[in-house]
Length: 453
Image 1 (cartoon, helix red, strand yellow):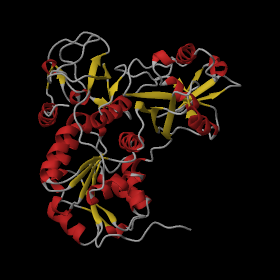
Image 2 (cartoon, one colour; image 1 turned 90 degrees about the horizontal axis):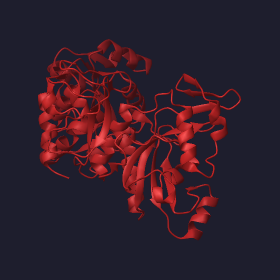
Image 3 (cartoon, one colour; image 1 turned 90 degrees about the vertical axis):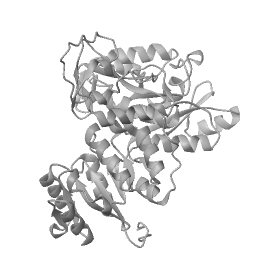
Image 4 (tube, helix red, strand yellow; image 1 turned 60 degrees about the vertical axis):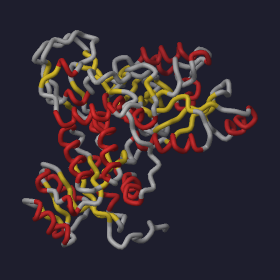
């Protein structure tokens, strides 16, 4: 058996993890048990009993787990080599944090934790993409001024896609499009005509005859979309993640709600070609999301990431096509992809990069805004709340648009706010329409926007 390397540091990196009692937190904590040079020192979550149960399920000795009552109690626990289970921000001992992994997914709390960590001189690994879309530019700038690092966390699609982009650009390619597959595949059983998306089934017999792209790609894509029209394929989380990628890469959205074509992976280089070359793109250098269509037993894209590049020499790309690489029919485009995102399992890579200063992630800028477009007429007084697994807000749809002078309200700043005025269906929600916006996060957004592109 080949094992992980021995401890590389004289003392382990002390990690504070917020939003600890979640799926992301669990995957990270499980992986940290394999890494002797990192330790989960402070686990922050209001559900302290849930955190404790999870640690016991992961095989952590009960004597090593301490539920604390204040910051001094936390400091004592960390100094004695125990894990401090922390209910709220007041109980965090920032002097005992080397890296904060922020995973609350909540704008107000997540921003406050990241801001406090930077002020205390701790590095920040940002997993809460919701916070990133609003305050990532400002937090990154503040971290740079304080001499610490602020990085998106490996294991979620934005950081993975940015790593792929770094590789693609370093090899000399021009990028036409970049993106990810949706979180859940469309799995078709041809014999029954049933398509399953994460347990939700729809009768879609037409899909059985649409497994091949045919000679008219756009007609095939339209027919596939019609066949699964009853399924909700777009998610706010997808738009959020692609907005984060935009901040770091400068990519924009070809259409504000993204295309979401229903695609087999071997078609990606044809689909994400320009319209002149038979694809769906009206512009290049864009982000997008596709819905993967597959059969039972076929490998999933697993919410993985891709980049579409322009090719070169025909013979070179015929050789690569012969080795199974995804090349468009006309040979002009190729798809380079990583079919995975392993959540917290990958995040130790970012933690190490934050401490060692080895990350190559560029400084973010507000190249686009994740905004909220009213899905129906909304009356003054309407409250907004983030709900569900995909952190969506009822009554509005997430869209990726060009930044303005700061009048458009970022989608996740609607959380906890309510409308001051009526907003008509189809209109963007603006700051002037809202009461109760989280003031600190809003100020950070405006600060980041002022840095320009």
